Image 1 (tube, rainbow, N blue to C red):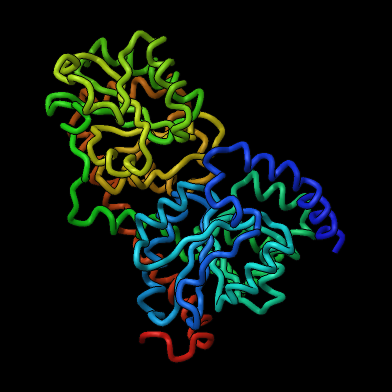
Image 2: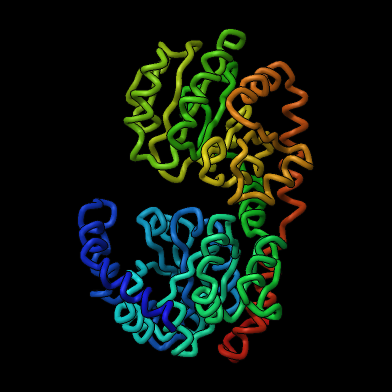
Length: 437
C-alpha cells in the first residue's frame, strides 16, 4: 500500500510539470483535453460492449492490428476502442484499423481521470500491448472487475532490474493482470520472478511475426525506386530507425564504401523525424548531398543520377515499405544503447538485416536471425564497413541471407491465433452469445 501512496504523491505532485510539458509540445496539443481527463471519448456504439486496447505509439498499434481484427471478427457485436499516447499512434489506428476500431488518447495516470474514463466506457475487457504497466489504470480496472490482459508482453533488462528494486510495489501492480501473454521464455521467467502466478503467464510468441508475414504475402512495396530517384543500376542501403550517434557511423561507412562502389545510395530514416534538419546538416558536413524524401518530386533528380547522395526519410509510415526496395538494410537503436527496433520489417521483404550489439528490446528475434543466417550482428562501426563491402561484392550471399530472413518470418507465424485462444477462453463467457464460433 505504501508503494501506491508514494506513486500518488509522485503523479499528483508532478501534475503542473506534466501539464506544462503537454502544452509545450506541439504534437501533444491535439487531444489535450482527453489527455488531461477533461473530455471523454465518444463511445463507439452506445449499448454495445466495449473491448478496449491500449497501445503506446505507431509501432505497437501496427503490431496489435492483426489481433484487433481477429477480435472484431470474433465479437462483431462489440465495439473496439484503441487508445494511444502519441500522435503517430492515432495516425496508425486511423490507417490500419479504419472501420474496425475507434481511437482515443489515454489520459495521464491520475486516479480521478482514469476512474472517470472507465466509468464512462464500462469496458468488457482491457488489453495492453508490450509494457504499458500504468499502476492507477490497472488498479481501477480491477476495482471495476474489468479483466486486464497483457499481450505481446515483454520486459527489457533495464525495466526488469528497476522492477526488481521496487518488487513489492510492482508485485501489487502485476497482480491486477488477469493474464500475461508474453513474447519469449525469458519474458515469462521475468514475470514469474516478479510474482505473477504461473497459471496467468503464457508464452505465445511475438506478434510482429504475424504482422510481417501478413503484410508481405503477395505484395510489392507501394513505393518504388523511381519515386526515390534511384535507378535500377544503383543499389540502395536503407538504415531505418536511426538515433544520434548512428547516422555519423553510417555516413563514415558509406563514404568509405563509395571508393569501391560509387553507385551505392544511402537512405537514412531517423527514428524521430523531428531530427531531419539535424541529420541533413550532418550529411552536408560529410561532404555529401542530402535529399529529403518529401522534396524529391520538387527537385530535378536527373542531375543526381550516378552521383553519391543520401536520402533522408522525413515522412511517417513509409519506412516499412521502403525496406522492400533495399539491397541491404541496417536497423537502428542497436549501435547505441537504445535496445533495437523492429528487425522483422526488412526481413519480411527478404532483405538481409544488419544490426549492432544493443538488441535488448528484440533479443530473441536478433538471435533467431543470426542463427538462421538472415541477419548479421556487428560489434560496432569497425565491423559494419567490411560487412557492407562483402555484401556489395557477393550478390549470391545477399540473396541467400534475404531468403533465410523471409523464411524465418513465415516459420514463426501463428502468434495471433495462439493469443486468441487464451483471450476467447476469458472473453467468451463475458460476451456470451456475441462470439462467432
